[in-house]
Length: 167
Image (tube, rainbow, N blue to C red):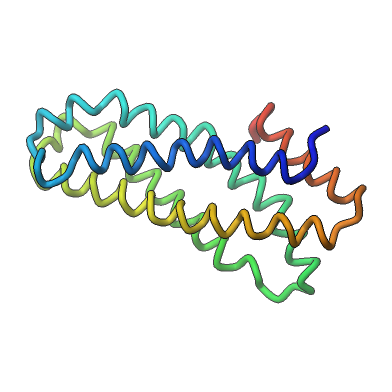
């Protein structure tokens, strides 16, 4: 069994990959290439990003909400330290759903306004996930400092289990 730090880094490395793809796609849709043909050309990568978000990110968030956040709240004597993170999860889910709707309705939406809307979704997801993942990484040392070795191992197992068998 891997320690909590290793499991967390492994998950976040995969998630950072998806965050990078969001930025790359948004760059492809910059003002210099707002033609609708460019959007159609990027559709396979757009689907790949969406699959990564729904297949890796959303299950990760579910697991973190079920395991890490309650543990942090317990350790912080229920001071609401994770409330903002849960709100961010809600916004991330909303943006991923908008991305999915955009992909499904793409033939009806291929115009310059649609390209700008898609770019805005990608950039908002990128910005939110960049800040969110960086903050999540700050919680790991706190958990390691305050959990017993048994508790830490159980939390690492719960997170690692998500990578093998998504919730």
